[in-house]
Picture 1: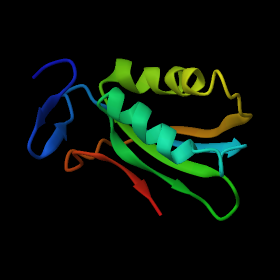
Picture 2 (picture 1 turned 60 degrees about the vertical axis):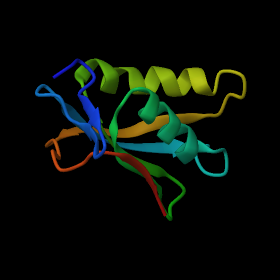
Picture 3 (picture 1 turned 180 degrees about the vertical axis):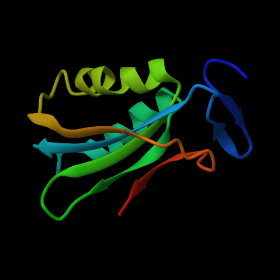
Picture 4 (picture 1 turned 90 degrees about the vertical axis):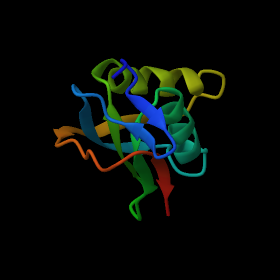
Length: 109
């Protein structure tokens, strides 16, 4: 298996050393394309998982993949908003068990 995991008709297969993070973002994260941007960054990094808006105005995401790619997610999000800065913080960050049945990144509604 490559560093990026295996990509095939069924999507991305998590590498053997995959990690999964549960994240909750607060601040200016709704109405600014945050879920769409998250999905684009995740797909570029070949991460699986999901992102969803919460009723309290925060956004929750779970991201999974190679440790270096998971670690690059937040810096890539900052870069994505470099020309149109928004204010947000990661309120929760927890490593959780890997979901080996997951093969895509999705925006949930």
